[in-house]
Length: 509
Image 1 (cartoon, rainbow, N blue to C red):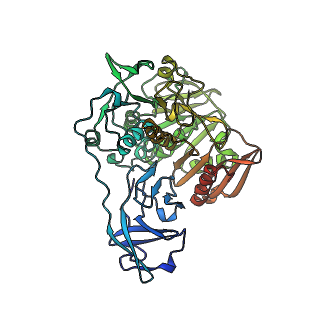
Image 2 (tube, rainbow, N blue to C red):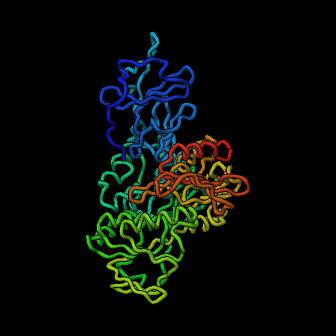
């Protein structure tokens, strides 16, 4: 989460020479005790907070693109003019200051107060203005928040099958599971946010049917009418079918309730078997080691993450985990689970106090299928995230959209992708007609290594490697047919941001 920025560098209240800030450049200093980013575009100079409001990334190390700056950590985008968080994963604006230029110097003056957020106490009851969002995950929350931010004044209902208000799911397999993230990091917004913004939040509720022709949906015994509908039903964990997989100490990690149940089992000295070397499985393994839990990872592949990140990164990830005491059983599957141990297909047995299954997820498509929407490995949407039914949009893990860079239809199960699709879908529900063209991006944090990945490469002809993963300094370019389809980096934020920008422009990084 964002941390208090530290005052360092030049004092912008006292001014800096204009010659120190060339066109397209940025400078980090301070106003009082607040860190400030000063940026120049042509003859315009802007001053905003220097710290990303997502996890506290240093915007001074980010990338300036026109009148925006992108965070080097997780690629959030902020307006230099207003400080607004334009693109996820940041949802909260950063501060903004007035700039004055005189006598060859640049001065940062008083803080510009953002426009007051509209507080809705009596939502409009007109059914024709009723926006409904189904799904309280990344895409659903981002859409609801953006609908209000973009000025929707009508009724807005957010329906979630989860019992908890929308929360920061990536943290569940990272800092929160490790015990280093406090509870107040987890909710995406405080509980009062929904009432203040006039968002009717229905928790523990399931939509059972949609009638696209009548613009109605069924929630329990109730029928709701909608003007526009967003489906963001997400994905659910793939369940293990091995004998013993239904025992109470065999867990999956998808929800906040799942995470809390695992934390209750993860006592120091406990023994855990993680089935699957997925991102979730490996992040969880790293988090459990922070709790002094003994961890064994069982997976059928020869290298962890090789299918996504290639052999060099796979070897690095294995070495990274083994250095922290994780034992791997690769090329193996689970034959049986009992109350105290896991038996593998080769007859080996591993003692286990609990088992965490991380073998992937599948999109929740049944609601869309029953409604008659076009589905093919996901809910088919166009570049505006519209489904085959009028006034119904889809975003997040269920959406399969036309990616302009690869020329293929993609369905991606990443948090930032879901949030950004939710934001674009919200604007299009309001008639903005904005194409979704953002390259996919995700990050994984395992111990002190953070791997960023831009683009999508289901397969490749070659991997170009610059640097050494073991030195925590590498860029891998996954190439096919003469183009770079994806770029994976460790602590090379500039290369990651540049790759994202190139793909946006249709250029091969």
